[in-house]
Length: 149
Image: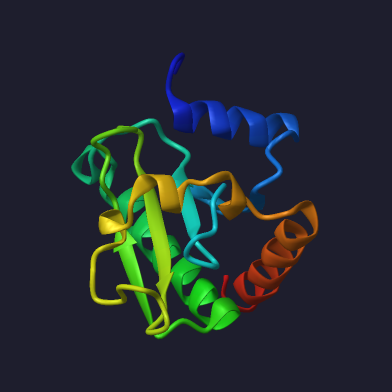
């Protein structure tokens, strides 16, 4: 859909220009987040342009949820956090996509929701991974994901 950030990101994956792309699954695309304030932050972008889980067919919905769980497990194995946070929000970008945040007790506010982190901190340019770091993040996640899916 024109103007949809997630559809645009998926189109970049299909064109081979999304440098954050990790893997294609049956129901979605796995990407690492553009900003890595929470090291290992990963997203699962639904292949279908839907706004709510109940809009998916029953079979597709079940596969999407299972795949999200597998991606989360791979994130956990790859980045060894103390806890994972899972979010399917859609208030800003309504195309369904899961946020999977690795959380660590060493963070400044480990018990606060991620969205309580100031945007200027979480999305600052120095939170963008270098090309070398990005390659390593993707490789580490890809290896663990392939052990699960």
